[in-house]
Image 1: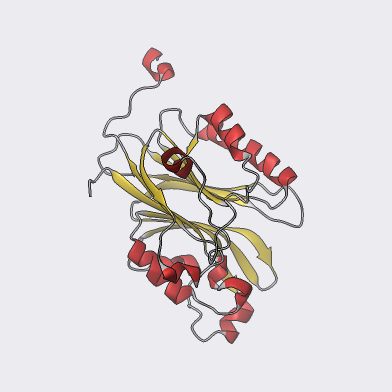
Image 2: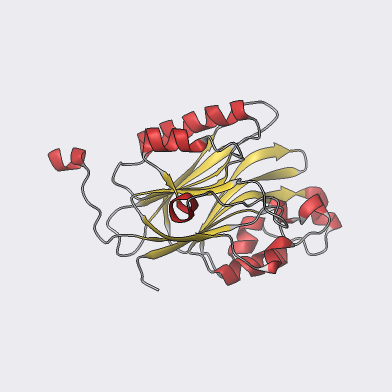
Length: 263
């Protein structure tokens, strides 16, 4: 595969438990992610700490779940809490084979009972002139939450992502009504990868019989090549979500934007 082809996988890992929290399956989930061999993982519902589960599950890792998954495959890890409780915390994580230049967690909680955030990482890729911006997101369940979160996300991108920089936003959008397109296409010139390649959004929930179009991979200033729900029986027995695996081609030299050309 070309050095300028980037493999991205987004996945809500359900805190390392199978559907209904019946079994702790994080070790098997890590094996599946290793086989998928993505360059960058964007993960949601990643458990950072849980004091009770550490006692009751014998195979609970000593490290955080992000570090456990990353070991041996993704040397660069950004984990950010977005839900804190007495027994621990969970949040979003970006695992990368390429180094971070910087990363930041932005609170997008719209209601007091549902903590949400977006994790914005900037990654240095070999042979690419521009910095790659990656945003991992897990949006709210209620439409009024998502409207506010879309607005915050748009403001974040307009303020912190150069128009000419490659940008990928992926995660669990909880957007079964498919309202995100209006915000992203009109305000940010973003396109959704599966929609571009297959003329529809991917069905990713529930994993054993996907019906709802919950998970997305949006992009700008990169060329989408593939975007699919991996067809492994193994995934159906892991999280309640199915993952999405996308590949993009990145140009060696990114064209200057009109603003840059006039500078």
